[in-house]
Amino acid sequence: MSKPNPIQDLRARADAFWQVRTEQERKLLRIAGIVVGAGLFYSLLIDPALSGRAALHKSLPELHQQAAEMQNMAREAQALQSQNTIAPTPMTRENLNAGLAARGLTPQSVNVTGEYAKVQFNGAQYAGVVAWLDAIRTESRIAVVDASFTAQDAPGVVNGSLTLRQGAR
Image 1: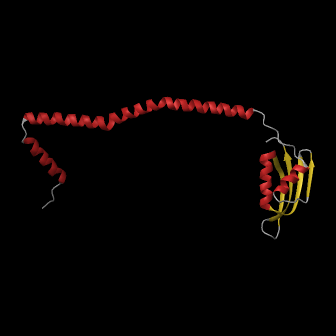
Image 2: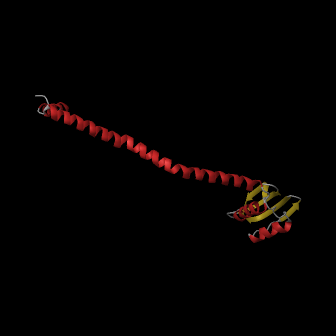
């Protein structure tokens, strides 16, 4: 005995249901099916598209306003970038020694010639030297041209030689 197919069983039941209906009932059922199908089509496909379009149309002026503000800020940033900034204080032996002393560093020697400086350390804390270099880079626009470090036996202690230059960015 073979097992009945559920789809064929369902189709047979629907066919039997349809056959016992009168022509007028069949016509009403067809119309009701068309109305339900059209309602589903509208509610699943048309309405979300229309409401999404309306929401986008509503938010468009705000987005235009934000874009205009961003363009104004970009123009302002570009104008500020082209303005002259305050020149940093010139690099002097006294300024370098004061910055080193503020970070607890004692250099072996500091020689300043024009816009260049040569600083030598013996037994300095590497973290302190790096912090000092970062500070003079941001505050006085002094950059490292050449650096040479030699690690010592104690952790974090180095001997070093730095060549610094003060100049434009």
